[in-house]
Image 1 (cartoon, rainbow, N blue to C red):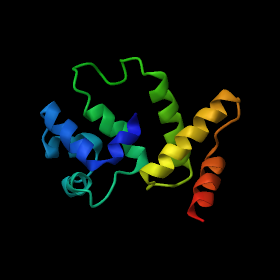
Image 2: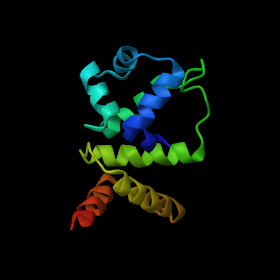
Image 3: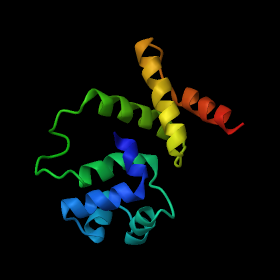
Length: 128
């Protein structure tokens, strides 16, 4: 699930396991080294639109990340994250993402479109 990359500890652990330097990961994702360091130390979190790039860069096998068939969970997560990103929302806490994921899955079951407007409304309602 892509949302695990909102946790800097996960990014750091997977980067080290993959044998990738901070410089190489920052370059692959398209961010400054300082930004990556802030993610890893927990000062900030990556923007939602960068989660797919982080996942691709940390793919440990030599296959192109696009060539592997994604799981249903990854498809759902990607679609949900794209809807949230279209709202212009760049920072979302893990609790809110978990809630949005549940709502998204229910929408899929009932053939109800999960739109950026719905995501925005759900996040706004959660702020109260």
